[in-house]
View: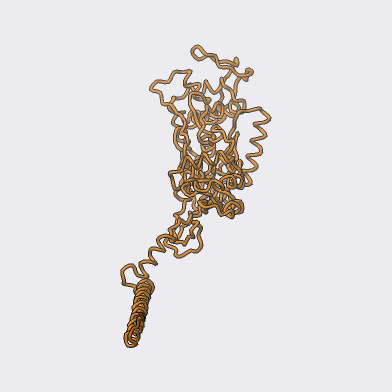
Length: 467
């Protein structure tokens, strides 16, 4: 039995299949075209249409938010110079290295490399990273020379960055250490002039916008938001040449006499300006790794002491002020000692009858005691006060002592006698220098200045010129 199909039915089936294939093709092509059209439209939205939701402005802002940062611009601290413009303190650019522990902790294989570059033990660095692992900032090394910092940054370790700072440098080192003081690692005044005039010397930091790469390194400065303002300069009254000379001589004297400490002050008697101020022991402000707290004091202004026989000329001056004595007036010091209450005051030898000038030149304790007991106690104390004892010298130096100038309701004879030759009171080296500058300038007193003066100082006549 044979089977057969009509020819017309076979042709019709072939036509139907071709039609179906064609429509499938058109359908797939249409879908692809629509997909491409949608992609193009989306790209247009992202790249061309600024107002479209999540358009190119949105993407641009998001990209900038991830790479645009605001950085601080450090301000340059003012320069300190001597009266002739010689630099005493200046700031030099340095780089501080810091890290983001949350990034650094993900690359422990880099820690030994970083530790070697920083010249620290790998264990110490690892302990530090773990200690700060929940923080986003920690210092690795402060105030490195730019070349040394670049050696570390060139390793391109993720999470390690650098920031520019300034470090204070003192060309004269220990010679000017006590007067200038120093700044801390953040360039803030801690001692001396650096502290007293910190606000004047400090500048105002600026701000800038920068672009950073994925590693956090600055690749471009975009805009300056605020300009950094440098601090103001200060010209001190000292002459650096005299400062070096005074320091050398004081250091030699301390060594020769095996002294524990010493101070020296040179004043301009006409202006009250400090021309030199030195102390022993001193310290190197550029290297404070072995610094002892006892070496920090500017002893010439902070340390008080009983002045002793340096007060004798001032007591004689008080006697002259009464009008009852003249330089040729005499005092009989025979037999070379004098008893006041239970205490006997002695001279090295029996000087006999002495005028006031010889009492000073021989530093006669007997002569001065007899002279002082013939005066009212207030005569001596009032003169001391007028010469600047028991009060500030006017420098504004931090920690300056005003000394001790007692004012007893009742003066015992022995107290009055001791007071006349420098015991029972306390003063600083600077106060003593100020008092003697009055004698040197015919009785005129000026405030002491550690800054160079451009105008004549305010003077006060505290002792008659004839005295």
